[in-house]
Length: 340
Image (cartoon, rainbow, N blue to C red):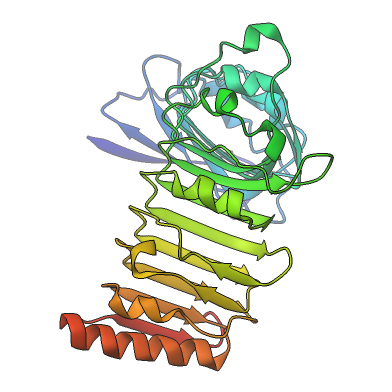
């Protein structure tokens, strides 16, 4: 049974509406606390300045709260105090402090869009977290002794986080033994040598890296991820010669590769570099001259080239023709100057 109940306050303007989705529960007319489980998704007018949390005082058993389309004000911290049963929380706020939600011990998914993140190690005591999706927040090694034993077995996705190479140790990633998807911005400042071999969670299936210098040590670390199926690189730079040579590297299980604003002029690899690759996306790589010839021998399913030099698109056309003649299978090809 699914019941959809529209609710509005007597003095509420027409633009402001709240919908509550209730499954397999009986709802009383005065919304008393019993066994109700609500999913609330309010849609507010941009011009409305009223407190969007008044209703939540009577819905303390709410489990899912999706508010990414609403810019929240400073009443946010107080509103969360009574929502101890939340499993899913998605919010859009100017500043966000992890301490606001550290008491939500049942929370499984946390999504935040904010221009300022205040970090607190208390967030990592939320043992039921599965998915953390925040536009960007810093991650540091814990200093308190009692936090050395924290292990988040349930965490599957983490990002976008930023951390230094010095903190990317095996001991740190062991705190997330089942992490499968990571979005990471590596800070390369300080006394740390940028060519250091990095550690990543070994069970990663999806890795996104942004705003970094791509070094041989970093590439070696990535190729050690035997379960990696998706790799996305954005805002990538090279020290010295802008030549990305992967001839001696193998991405064993990689199926999807996206290169966005990777500032290389030449790219080379062997047939063995991408034995399982199916999807290749190259976007806004203004200095790249062409796609390596070795891709003619790889059984790709799709090539997408966006906002690159004409020669990159020409090489994609050649790869499509040769590969299809060789394997008698069609490759989807998309070439455009900009996103459409």
